[in-house]
Length: 350
Image (cartoon, rainbow, N blue to C red; front, side, top):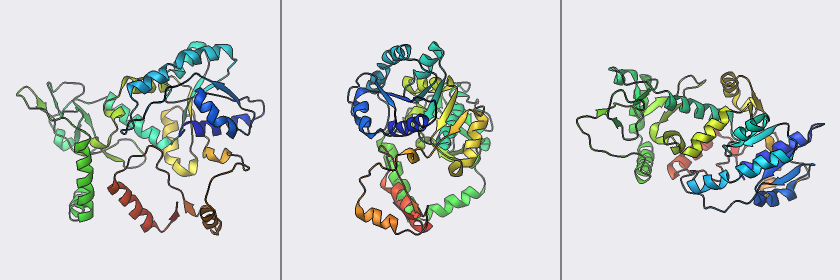
């Protein structure tokens, strides 16, 4: 529902435009859930049934889930043949949508319900993985990041061997030394390291004389972004380090689209919107926050105590709302750091 709800809000925006007819296509079970919430003349078309599959804890798309989603391709193709369509707005989790649209000569637009920031980060990571640079003699000096999952390879010319990451500044050494003296930081790192071990983040393999072991640095700087964004390889999701066939098809599907609609707005991430438009030929449209399209007469199940607290605020935009998503996976140490930051900011929040 984290994707379907903003898509429904987007359909409301389309339906409110003169001369535009919006149609929502979704699995039958989803149609039955969203139908009572409609307040616009939006047509609903069922796209078959999906089996209920338990979502894995690691937030990955399993082969069973991918197979269920792929079963919708043929019904979707037939639906487009039966209905006159000027444009398709597809969620990224339908990796065949743009190909089907291309086959029928219909323009397709990808919908991102998160942000331009996340799209830029994922695209930058994808470029690093897709275009690695061979190991050099000055790897340690240049800040080379080892990219092989076992941190070893059979040949120094292996295309998956290494990729360049910008070296850290000298000042970061002092920051690291100061952090090592903080027991709270050390405890947080210990918890995260234990989680990495439990999740099997890396594989230990015996070193043989034929292996070329790549020197690597734990953190690396993503190149070409408006800000300094540091990541460590263990922080990267599996769909980046070990992309499944489904993830690869979703990425290829995104390359075929005409443009992208994003649930964001300029004041939230101005620099990253500009960066995304520059790298995407300008065909990015920011329409958020889409939740504002919710009809004023809609009812919400908020407690009286919460509403009275919000009504007591004298100024607009004075309360920060945090949402970790329905599938947010955070360890206790991460939540504690977020809480300490919020407390130190002095901003009231929910």
